Amino acid sequence: MNENGNEAIDVVAESADRRGPSVAVFTLGGTIAMTADPATGAVRPALSARQLLDSVPGLTELGVSLSVRDIRNLPGASLSLADLDALHAAIEAEASGGADGVVVVQGTDTIEETAFYLDLLHRSAIPVVVTGALRNPTQPGPDGPANLYAAVVTASCPRLRGAGCVVVLGDEIHAARTVAKGHSTSPAAFTSPGSGPLGLVAEGQVWLHHGLPYRTAGRLTGDVVRDDVRVLLHTVTLGDDGLWLELLLDGAVERCHGLVVAGFGVGHVPERLVAPLERLAARIPVVLTSRTGAGPVLAATYGFPGSERDLLSRGLIRGGDLTPHKARLLLHRLLATGSQLPQITAAFEAIGRRG
Image (cartoon, rainbow, N blue to C red; front, top):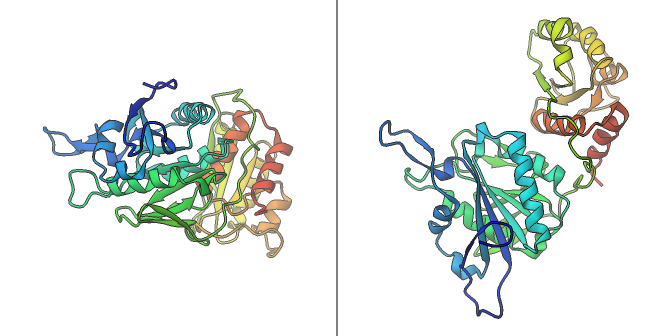
């Protein structure tokens, strides 16, 4: 065990007096760590971090010193923000202890959200690399070992210092800000709509296509002052009559501290939703995003009732190009750290700037 409580694994193919980079591996569970239940045949998380790394060929040749710790062993869908806060504390301890990088292994269901949340919190220069698998170890051609190998390569690469949190699957490196899971089962499920991947892992090396991503690291520096924050997400649909918003106004808004609206296109809603949204924005922060999955909410192009210009004039906060799910995480963290409306608005304005 090292000073941070991790199990040390000697996979370094170097002399004792010339060790290579050090990478800490944290596991949270997920498909990559699942095995079949003998009673039902269905898979569930069971494998430890050590077992996962033992399944990866070629690690010794990388010359990387690895340490491992099992943080959780859950499906990705069952992870909580409290789990991620505990993981963040462990990552910061590794950064302070001299690690060169961190790999986080988890279920792919929530990777695009967990990676973004970690990126908001991570202040150290060392890269945090999140990976997982679409095929569990009992299936033909499981992708977990290859993804773990590529993640270790990425985490140990000095060119990724300052990149914050990235996602690596299918040998592609994606920024946490842009990554999305676009398919339910394909090993090529992860993409970065509108920007493409940052780079590629090939022959044990990182090949970067772009410069490091613009990040908001350090903006969320406050400590959590409340753990009861609830931020809801409403996706606007054709024929939406606003009943859900009216119900929220009539009785539930006291138990809701913020709202994210996933509107049509560049940030549009049916005219009938304008009045309840304006009333909600007078009581809680309401962030306007697009449900399209790529591209920004506009600010001043359309002017009809329910357009982005109309809604922003009524007190809604522009969510920039954040997806609804990522905007919800940012709003949740801001509220949990005690930010008020001016600070929340400024944070979303800042994250909307690319440089």
